[in-house]
Length: 344
Ligand code: NAI
Image (cartoon, rainbow, N blue to C red; front, side, top):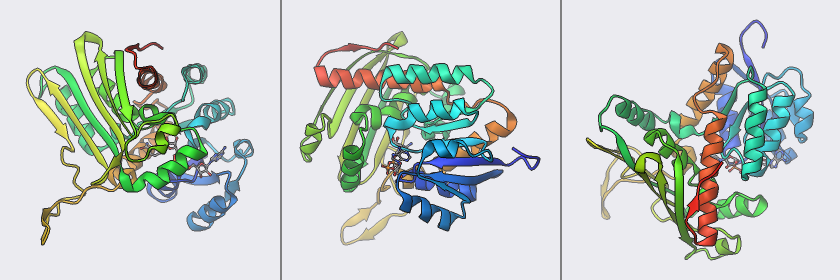
């Protein structure tokens, strides 16, 4: 790490989200240097190196892991690579940040959990960035202060904008995404565990593809719903989708014994109301990069800070394993039509 206490990071994946992380790591995160970038697409590597002033570029991940100047690896590659890349980076002695989901299958998620436990002195963090979003953090603090009594039910909507469908289809066709529940609902499943302070026990999930029927050919759903029973008789209702006409709709409600909190009930872009021939219009956030820009930055800041302070961040590998178990149970229920017990 050197005496100047600066963390040297190698980033893998320069796609929709990786490029945002690259900008943050290069310019916005204190005590951090983006030293290397890696993608299987050479043109992405060259472009990022030129635009962000990154000294090393790779099209081979394992070659990047041999760079002795690096302290940490930041993984934003497609989900099917996460587990393998995490294990290799840990084995090579690096601190590791990985995008969600931890894994697409329970076996690999459990294998990674063991690998993380074998390297307790290396920081591991999973990209559940909503836990760093200012509104979600504020809601958590309110709950901890007793503002709504005991949280007993959570209702979540996570629906991608319809206009992002071409990009999503490209993403889903080039690499297995895990399907609607593991790819999209996973953030809400993690938030439910966080806010309710309870683990999921059983789930019933349904779904369908009505506008883009090719999603059904990918064994996926365009819109899905899951009803989850948590320990202590707590409840979760989840709607996930990819076809939101008005934009990126991320909404969360937490009902407690003494009150209710709602986050993003109307998913406004900002505070501006446009009054014109259409009436009074509040525009909607357009996608994850816009809605969670601050959260992506703050999770990166936390990762680097945890390395410098020699501690583990709040989002742990166990959160990845347990949310994957729940996401997988949702997927299994959707595919079989059965009520599914959640097991790890
Ligand atoms: P993408 O498909 O746009 O980009 C993937 C990138 O990885 C591309 O640069 C591609 O060339 C590179 N790549 C593919 N295979 C590789 C390999 N074997 N080695 C090195 N590089 C490789 O994907 P996107 O949307 O950026 O998603 C990346 C990850 O981030 C996914 O796991 C996804 O689930 C997650 N994600 C998380 C979000 C969040 O809100 N936390 C939002 C969007 C994505």
